[in-house]
Structures are given as structure tokens and as C-alpha cells.
Length: 497
Image (cartoon, rainbow, N blue to C red; front, top):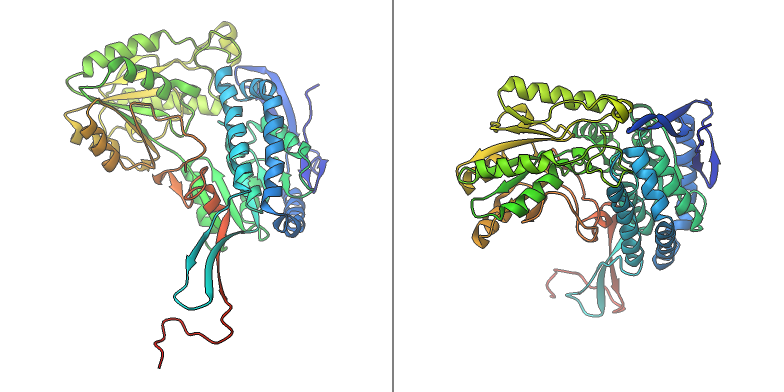
């Protein structure tokens, strides 16, 4: 019998009132049921929001360094359970075990980082133009947040939202993806083990269209932090636009790696493989476009295809596996559909393009690493987010042309250039329309101490992670305080008579 996990509402674990459950299965072996979670409805959301509102006043008044101590204890718990959590991430989401370990390590890093922010949360103190008067700005919490997360990083992305939200003095209702709810539930269990007061963090399982949208629009919610597709994020933004809610949406990407004629091709090949096929291409920062200078195009393509042919696809727990399955049948059909689109558009299918079947493959959602050569910038496979192990290789005349191709999409999340020319890297750094630019590294690999997010259809509102300019700006509002201790009325900007 599969293990059943529950909602956490007001410090108590409970099932959905409907009695219905959602089954989470292993995408590498659909006969393996990872666990069952409640199929929550409006009643559970209402109760969770009420619990968060009730807990907010006490949590807001808890000194920020004390709030940080809960996160420090959580970091220690995550480290202690890292191997268990990583194996759970691999089993439930499908990514290979080293990536599962990295998923959990990001949560550890964010817990430690935000625990430290409990002793910073810095504002400014500035001089006043008037005698015996001081001026300062303070960060204050916003209230109750809805935190809605995707399935591709079931531990890391929730941590990116939960920890800054809590250290800033907010309370939260967390709704994880219904595709990877068990990993999220284990994360919340460990956070609760840190001694967090009841109601500060509430967990409600359910589907996005029912539970997620109702939670985002709930009148008791002051802010929404969402990570997922651009279409859903934009719908949530419209939903919240008239409700005076803070909203941050980290969404899709169509991320380019530019390879210049002076690049170290061995390094660029390694980066392109990792960027295109890491997590089976199921990252918002995946490198789905490889824009290569015409002088090295043929050589790069031969080397890239040779390296991609050596990738072993299989169960992520197998130490020899380089790439796991996609998350579910619907995603597999979407990716295979885009491969057919690429063929019809006239791109040359140079590698892969099929579902892997037979043997252990027959029980999972496995797709070959797929490479389209001679893709045109305007093709759908070079414009639309596929979210699978598919890379389009595009030829560029020079740096200007490469940057123009890179910018010629509706997304602007992550970007990369491989070059040994410092001037070329400086131009790319300046002109690439993306929230993140990597130089001589792939499009994936963000670190928690800097803001994460994109432009255009890749992001709305504040950024994730980081301190100033990042998630602390999302989860706090500014209050300015003027204190006049002169003992008389002073009129700023008014000349004395």
C-alpha cells in the first residue's frame, strides 16, 4: 500500500474533506507509486489561509534573528536527510541522482543563506537636511503569501520561496505541483521538525487549476509567488491584477548558447550537452538553442553529435545514467509533437527523435537526446519552449547576427556565450536580452546569493533568490521613518523667513 501524505494546516496534518487523493508515480517506472496526497478543494484552502492569517501577527513580531534560527535548524535537518531526499527527488521526478543531490543542496544553501538574512534584512540610514532629525528605511513583511511551485525542482524551488518568505516575517500557504507532491511534503515535514510555530507554514496539496487558482485569488492572500509556464503565470497575473496582490512569476525560457569561432570547442560541447540535456531539458534555463558561428559550425555539430550519442538514457538511480525520463505521458507527447513539428518545418533531424521502448524503457517516459541541425531562427522549434531533450543548432554569420538571433524570441531568461575574446564577451553581456548571462559556461547553474529571473515572457514582478534586488524585495515592503527630536516644528524644503 503506498504511503499517504497529508496537508499541514495550522500545525495539524489532515486529509482532504472529500477523501479523494492524488497518486504520484515514478516517471521511470509507472508501476512504482511514490505516494498519495490529498486532492484538496476550497475548504482546505480556506482553512490554510485562515491559519496563516492567525499566525501572522505573532510571527511578524518575532525578531528576525529568531526567525532565522528556525531556518538554520532546517538547513541542518536537510543536510542530515540529504541522501534520502535526493533519492526521493530522483524517484518522483526522474532526474539522475547527482541532480537530485543538487536539488536538495540548493535547498540547503537557501536555508543557510536566508537564515543569515535574519541578522541583516538591511535598509538604509541617511542624514536629514534638518537639525536633530534622523531618517531611515525598514523592511517590513507583507502578510500572507501563496507559494505555488512546479515539478522540475521539487525541493529547491519551494525552498527558494519558503525560506525568504518566512525570514521576512510573512506566513505562507504552500501549494506544490501535483506531479511531485511527495518530495515537497517531506521538505515541509523537516521544516516543521525545526519547531516552526503552527500556522506559519501551511501545506495544501491539489491540482493547479482547482487548488492553485483558488489559492492565488483568495481574498486572504496578500501576495503570490509562482514558478511555472508562461501561460499559467500570465493567467495568474491577470487574475491578481485587480485584487491588489503582490505577484511574482518566474516562467519559461528559450535559452541560447552562442559559440563563437574563437571558442574552446571542447568546453562549449560539454556546456551544450549539460545545458540541453541536463534534467532531460526540463529546466526553464535549459539551452534549447545552440547558435554557432559559421566558421566552426560543421566542426561543432560533428563534435556535439558524437558526444550526444554517448549519453545513456535510463533510470536516474542507475550510476551509469546520464539522462532520465520526462515527467509524464502528457509531457512526452508534447515533446514528441514538437519533434514532428521540427521535421515538417524542414530542420534536419541529426540525432534521436524517438521514444525509447522495450525492456525497462516500456515502463517509463523516455525520449532520446534529440538534435536538429540547420534550424532557422523563425522555426517553432527555435521559438517555443519545448521543455524536453531537444536542441536546435542554428548557424550565425558573426557576433552581431548571433546576438540578434538570441534576442529574437519572446523569452529572456538565461543566455550564454563561449568566446576567448574579452570584447566579444563584453558586447554579449551588454546586449543579450536576458536576466542571466553566462560567459564560457552553460545556461544553467544559478547560485542562491544573486537574483534569479528573466525579462519579456520569462518573468513578471520581483526576482527569485538573492537579497537586495531578489526575493527579499518580493517578500517585504519598505517603510520610511523620520524622527524629529529637535523639540520644535521644522518644515522640510521650506526656506526660513
